[in-house]
Amino acid sequence: MEVATSILNVKKENCIQTFYNLETAGTDYFHIDVMDGKFVENNTVELMTEYAEYLNSITNIPLDVHLMVEDVMPFIKSFLIFEPRNITIHYEAGKEEKELLEWITYIKENNCKAGISIKPNTEVEKIYEILPYVHTVLVMTVEPGKGGQELIPGTINKIRKLKEYIEENNLEVDIEADGGINLENIKQLKEAGCNIVVAGTCIINSENYKETIEKLN
Image 1 (cartoon, rainbow, N blue to C red):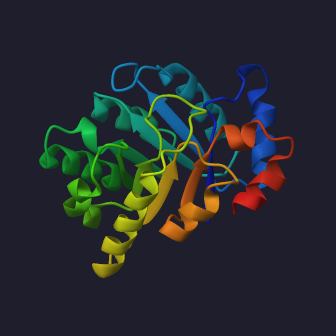
Image 2: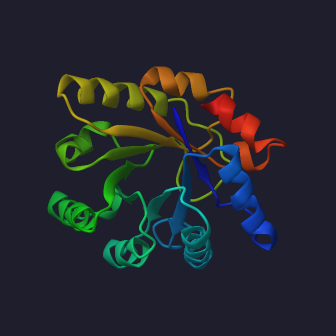
């Protein structure tokens, strides 16, 4: 299991020290939650751009960018500057499959991995045809837009279903889960077929980052 630490709730005044502590604690990725205030309520564009800029200059830990935005292409372009490992777009942000595939192709043409994300109410079948074109599926296990929510139990079945489909069709796709993930439910996610988890408050609010990340791993 790989761990992407969401930096959404990292306090600005000591963010550099926190990033350093997370790096030495062994996080696999820094998860950048980009919200535009339209696709979801919160607006984190300014903060996440600033954090991505810092991280790009101080660490070699890869960035895992999650775009929760309506106007997708401008955000893809502005975050490609930071040379992230991957950029994940939302299935629900595309008007049709053709548009989604255009964004995915653009991301991949710029030496970046592409991911597709689905909200808790979106059925996994909706993205089956897109799976051959992406590296990652990000299953939202809470409603996107806020940190600190509780994982929605039904989303674990979606991961299980997705894993079965990926294996049956010999696809090479990572399954990432995001939202309400902690030491109590991580085992269920792993058993369902998830191989990357996004954890925010669970790590940031813990007394020992290294210990928490190791337990999640």
